[in-house]
Length: 170
Ligand code: RP5
Image 1: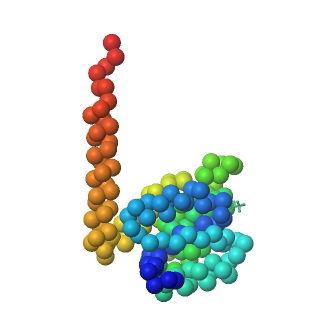
Image 2: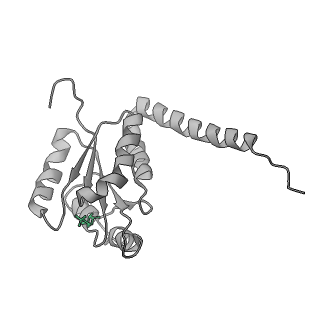
């Protein structure tokens, strides 16, 4: 890593590069919140040893939260959670076969003792926000940026509503 680069605090791991278009929204939002992150494609099924090395070395490199995304037989988030006590947020990727219900059930139905905080199907943004909220517990500046994000979101809904024609049509 070059000296000017900041170590990633969120490790995003996807089951395939085909998941990147969904998960790029998490990278973008973390960037807006000034949270350094890194994104990898490491299949739990096709490259389990590489995945174990990645998870095993992540904390020493500065990672504090994982976001794990996978579709179909989506075992990746559970396998990541099995190898770390850092928090793991699971993102079920939408699929052709069952619209992502297959991914959702594969990720959310973890056995007790190994939690994965699962967000809605395709909800990369909420995964990013949840990761930032976890980091903000020990980072007051990030907490401030999250509050500003939330306030801006509320203002945009209020402005949108104030511009709407609320009169009932005759
Ligand atoms: C999963 O299988 C990946 O997370 C992806 O969502 C899905 C399809 O992967 P590819 O066949 O596109 O590599 O493991």
